Image 1: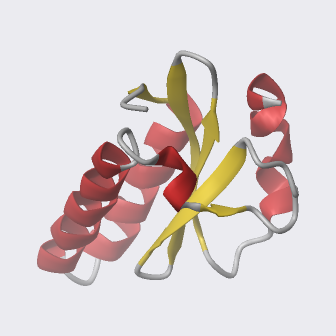
Image 2: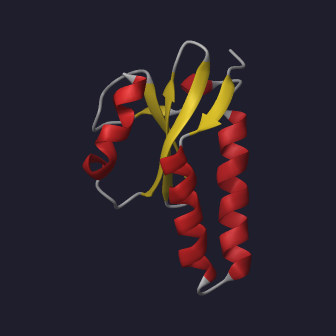
Length: 104
């Protein structure tokens, strides 16, 4: 497929917040997690269907990849892949469900 990958402002803010939180204890681990999330986000451009369908939404156009204990949630559109959220695996997805409106 090789679609362009874009980040929503909310997803960018999610990643920044995660990095700030982890950096309170370890700058090293904060950088490691951010680096891995960014690497995974770049890799989905070639194979966007490799991510699993988000169980709470059950839409084959909204998928996620797990990175450590975080969920990188993205929507597959006709011309791009939109990263819509980076959330902790224990966080309720319903708190960010309005972000998916653009992808459905």
